[in-house]
Image (cartoon, rainbow, N blue to C red; front, side, top):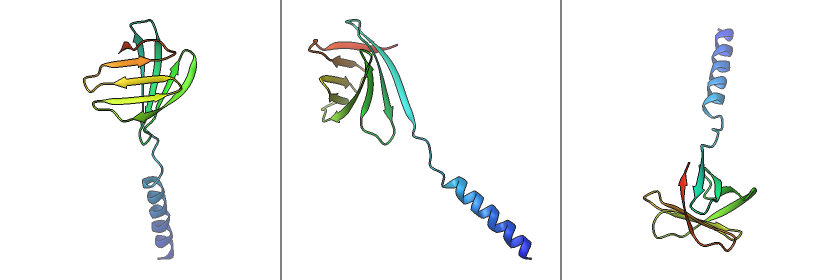
Amino acid sequence: MGCHKAILLAVTMLAGGICHAPQADAQTFRTYRCADGTRFIVGFYDGDKRAFLQIDGEPVTLAKRLAVSGARYSGAGITLTIGKAGTTTVKHLKRPVTACAVI
């Protein structure tokens, strides 16, 4: 009887460890090309409201900002706007706002 309890305890602990193991955060990466020739990669992680950009060879983290429609992220002189309809624009390095599309 003691052996059965030990096996049951081991199975229960193993199942509990598997069920409560931390999940890896889901992530989304998109590559964009803009009308002015700019290319950038943006990454989003579940549970994180920031956008992580790789633009002009430099990594930049953008904080989420208040937006009327869609999502807007900004920081370090860069503003990324993603509309509800999927339209995306970027403004950086004192360049004008330019339309971008996923490639």
